[in-house]
Every structure is written in structure tokens, then in C-alpha cells.
Length: 176
Length: 176
DNA sequence: GGTGAAAATTTCGAAGG
DNA sequence: CCTTCGAAATTTTCACC
Image (cartoon, rainbow over all chains, first blue to last red; front, side, top):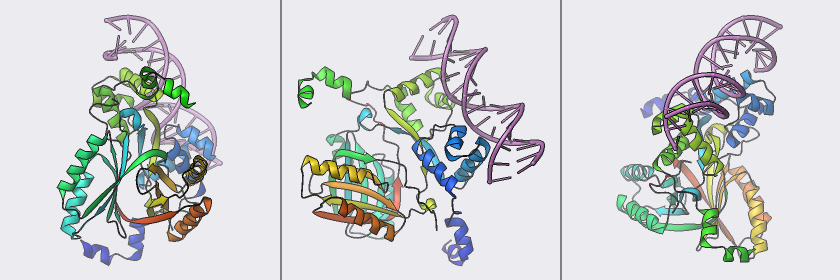
């Protein structure tokens, strides 16, 4: 399988990895849809200066290309009793592929984990975890450290959510 | 203003802060909508065992109550050229209200900042920042440290996004 | 609360410049 | 690549359990 990738021409790689440059209208559509995906196509068209059919086609195309991943509802964390956000830094002693696979699978399967990144530098992994209360966090923590061997785990608790958005800052010129 | 809060009865506080307990069907609806908000009400109703009118009413109610905040489109970060995610830890020397207000306003206004929390413990603030490349990060960093006086800023760069979701783990029993 | 069906909107594709 | 137009599907409301 790796051979296939290594043998791919730059052009082929480009087809897979680099989407076309989005024009100003597509970028506007993304900005609008990231803010409110419940708008009708006609309304979005109005805001970006298009009638509904071309606007609809552009949206369809960006969905087909995977630029628009999905439409979701955002829920108020506190209103459903999830009062605690925790940033967890993990250092792993073991850096083998097998270990990583096991760790990644275990952590990905935990619904409390909303974000999970492999990092450069002193911390090996960062997690953002959401739970109802300290007791739930303790249960989560035990589950985490019992899943695989970890060298160090640091939990930092959020006191106040000052900003949290899902809308990416659509660049003036996208995708090199 | 604080007097008002301190004088509020538990019942009054409860009215403001604790929404009704969601039943099993409402929780199912939230789970479905957090995964796919493009489904028709009829389809959602099917999945949770309801016909479309009652399902629609429950969704309307949860929107009115602010449990469902909004519907948004999620966009692929890499496909629009935003290759870099950074977790930024900030220690502030100054802990005055005025300083916090200024810092919170400045950081909230930066579109690169997707999450921004005030923390307990050794780190005062945590940010998750998304930018196109290192040069953009450098520009962001300079903007950040020039906005207000900071004691210490640590940037940790993500190498790989292993998991990232917006769907909260809807608890079996919500909102105490 | 819930059901079923009619009325109002919206989506999506065809025809054409 | 855009506009107009219309059929099909969906959302939303209403009368009734």
C-alpha cells in the first residue's frame, strides 16, 4: 500500500490532497454556513449575491469534495449537565506503532473525549474532555490510565468558557 | 448586582440555571441532531420512535430553551488550507478584573482562536488556535502578546488530529 | 403528550442565454 | 457560470385524540 503512495506523481497527490482554490463566493458560502446551516439556499444566495440554483450547486460541490463535512446541531454543554471541561496532557513512555494504535483506538472510543491530538514537543498528546462532574472525571481518568501504560498525565480544569466556536477562519486565499 | 444573586432562593436560581430534565426521547433527538442536522424531521422521528409532529415540537422546544444552540456546517480544516492547530497556555501576572476584561475581549475577537478557557491551577488560560502556516502563527503570536501584558505563553503544536467532534456525550440523566 | 393530513416553503433539476 | 421556472419533497400548522 505504501508503494502506491510513493509511486504516485505529484499531480496525483495533488488530486487527492489539494482541493481547487475556492473563489470568493465559495468562501463566503462557507462563512455563512459555518455560522448558520439552517438558512435556505435562497437566503444564502442572497447573502453571497447569487440566485438559488448556482448557490445550491456550489454547496453540493463542496459537500461532494469533502470541504463541507456535515451539518450538525450544537448543544449547550451546561444545559445538559456537562459542567466540566478538562484539558489533559499525556506523556507516553512507549512510542511504538503498536502502542500508538492501541492508545488512539482506546481514546477515540471514549465519548467524553471531544478532541485528541498527537503533539510535537514535551507533551505527546492533548485531549479535551467533557464530563458532568468530578466523580465522572475520576471515572474517566481511571479508564484512561488503565487503557495503556502512560508516563505522565496532567489534568487542567476549565473554570470558565470564554469562547468556543466551530467556525474556522476561512482564509482570504485558501488551499495553496 | 451580586446582592441579587446572593438573595435569590434556590428555586429562582434553579429557574435560571437548571433546565427541565430531558427524557430519553429528547436525549435521543439531541444525539441524532448532533450527528446529522440535515435529516428531515420525519427521519429523526423514525429513529427515536415518534411521528414527525411531536418530534418537531420537541425540537422547537429545545431550541426555544437554548438547549439546541444552532445548526452549523462543519468544514474540513485542511481542505481550506488551515494546516496548523496550536494549544496555547497563558500565565498572566495581572489578575485584576480590568486586565481580564481587556484580555478576554482582545482574544475573543481573534478569529484564529477557536477555544478560549480560563483555567484553574498553574496555567491561567488555554487557547486552541487554528492557522494556515507557521508564518501566520507568528503573526498571531505577536498580536497576542502585544494585546496585553502576559507573564508566560507556551505554544504546543499538533502533529496529527486523531479525533475531533462537536457532539457532546449526552448523559443518561441530564441536568441535575 | 400524541396522530394524521392539509397548507406553505424549500429543494433540486431542466431548459436556455 | 448564471437565470428562470416547475415538480417533488419537506416543513409547519391545524383539527382532533
